[in-house]
Length: 158
Image (cartoon, rainbow, N blue to C red; front, side, top):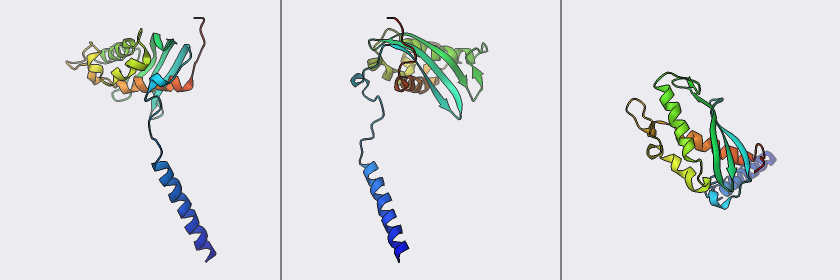
């Protein structure tokens, strides 16, 4: 009988925890980026899936504005390609990623990061007749958010 009381108690504890979690505010980090203050400096972040780094970015943030941004690593898994690929259509896909990232340069990050969710209006390079909507710009967004959550990679003399 004592075992069943412990089992019931444990079950009630688990259910209580699950209910408590279900009623918490589930907003994603940086949903309202204007409320966050990020230090000036160089940031690095990655989007990793299936154990492989797919997008790695580096950018310099000054007063909330990206002043420089580069792709440090870009890798497509299906089909496979790498940042240094020169073959078409992969080179054009890489250019789309570069254009999407460069869109942010000179702009306040808090106001413009959300625009990458619809890259068709930002990217001009076409791949086999398709528009910029063919890139997975969410990977860039994820890499930037990763960088912001990690904090400054290197402080620069500004």
